[in-house]
Image (cartoon, rainbow, N blue to C red; front, side, top):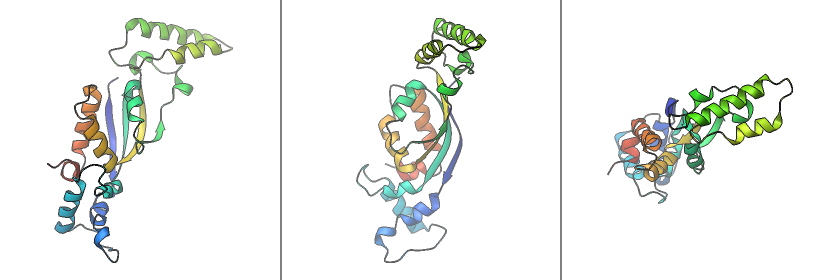
Length: 194
């Protein structure tokens, strides 16, 4: 199983572009379509220095997606506050039902997979399930084990992640992730312009 992102949905982009002008308004606008002036301002503010506060309107563009990634990726991704899990696959509930070979990436040792499969088969054949055997399996899941999750985040968080992870050592995962960000509607223009 390989790292992938699919089922991407983006919400609130046009409204966030319009609302980027709120700091200079004495009353709120109810317009539905951004003007050229709104877009120009949003590009300037969106490309402001990270943590300056000028790009905070990017929080208004919400992104939801399904991502399948190895455990070593999840350890890094969880450090981001606004990378919220809607729901995810569960090793606690399903480890004895996963096809371990299919769930792991190609870097996991064959011996590791065979050992886990043997213990899972033994556990599943028992009428009274051995809790110690379950602990053995759950404790030895390799870092190359892939789990899927549905995530909610926003353009501001993705901008931070992009800049921190572009060129990361885990290029297969973070490189793919950054390329995916670049394909989001107007992400390059609002977050990555030079």
